[in-house]
Image (cartoon, rainbow, N blue to C red):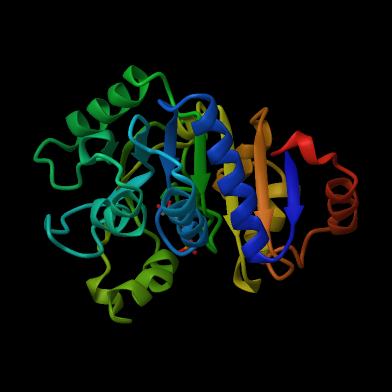
Amino acid sequence: MEVVIAPAEELAVLAADAIEALLRRDPATVLGLATGSSPLRVYDELARRHREDGLSFADARGFMLDEYVGLDAAHPQRYRNVIETEIASRVEWPADQVSGPDGLADDIPAACAAYERAIADAGGVDLQLLGIGTDGHIAFNEPGSSLASRTRIKTLTAQTRVDNARFFGDDVDQVPTHCLTQGLGTIMQARHLVLLATGRQKAEAVHQLVEGPISAMWPGTVMQLHPHATVLVDDAAASRLQLGDYYRQTFASKPDWQGL
Ligand code: F6R
């Protein structure tokens, strides 16, 4: 696992560089998309590169990590709509090339199985962007999630609903209680995991993710088993890392050509 500690703007550039390198090498790259605050600077940077440098998403595929259950199709916080607003529309990504789990499906298990098949049929995810919850979730794999889980319905923890109330007019009762989420086993099949975390409220989750014992209680710790995982954190999110100085030194002495 590589840990990079830098200001948030630099982290976004590093993540965008990794995505751009994939797209330039293979325009039909498959990207894994996260929602929430953490990837927003990356999406801004990709939109800029699309606008100014012609970075193309015309042949790329995108798969979202998760979706709320029961939010109506037009709801601005429905994750498919958030992804459309924050990235897809800004890079002219054809709508039928970006998919998410169907949070309005009548048959939820069938919809989850279909989503797993769609990812596999696309050849799997090349680079998966991730954020982390203050309770250690990645995607919406809340504490206690099986480390081998696949796409399924989950109940959101009270903590996650409080954390996400800011997207729902600070009214926790408006935050859905359930979601569909890629499982930890699904996420672990992506070829490169890139997790972004900023702010002191993420410090304990980041410490556990990088340095804690692998445990369903801190679901992000499963990333320690991935052969190509990158954790991008600012000083505040890195503030509880025991080996912070070592990660800083390692990154400072890394040759530029190496990328993430
Ligand atoms: C969202 C997702 C979640 C968020 C996490 C952090 O698609 O998968 O795991 O990444 O809740 O959210 P922010 O980035 O808003 O702090």
